[in-house]
Length: 257
Image (tube, rainbow, N blue to C red; front, side, top):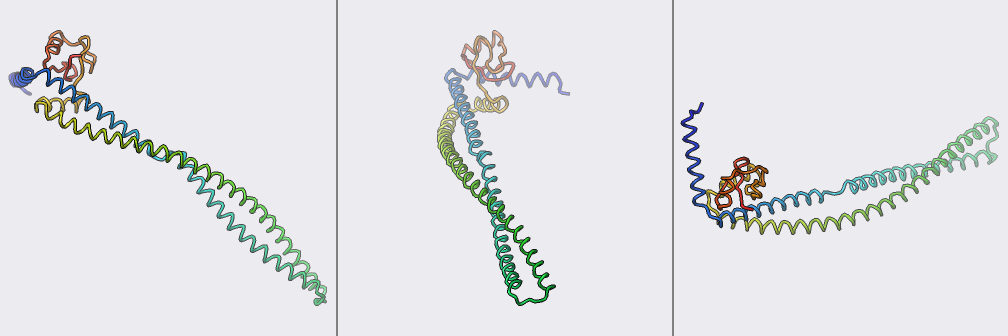
């Protein structure tokens, strides 16, 4: 365990360093620090806005779903067209076969009654198949027409959706460029502002900002606006006296409001 003497010595060294900072600090430097804080807050706002825009630039789910649905419909239309063409060929072959059997049956060349009966039976079978193919072909043609109309209608709707999205996207990209340009100016301004601040104070500022997100806060009605804790009379007097004062509760640097 660390002895009380060592802890006291460490605390004395820290207090001496803080006293050095307090005594060597001026209101103008505190104002510079507060200005740096405002710049950092603007940069944070810009980063948040950029993240939101990057999210908005993702293609809308409705557009993705619509595109997938149309692709599925197109594939189904192609399969239906292929099946309809196959039935067309089968219908043609069955008609040719039926014509051939009919001519053979009624040509008078076949005299044997059994052969005639077989031809008649075969012709009936071909005609039955032909009727089934024709019925299926009719259904396929109707289905193909429905799918074709559906694909055309949905493609037109998709085109409108894509045009609307493109307009929004262009607006988002324009806004993104504006924010990035502003961010570039802020970064340069921050670099210039930071260089004008005492390096030790700047290091303290950065350490607090890393832990708390905001290093400098105002004091209003005796309260730290970072943690809303009522400051001691001594702390309030030090802040009003334009000294560098850290809130005893949250550790943030206090700026007179």
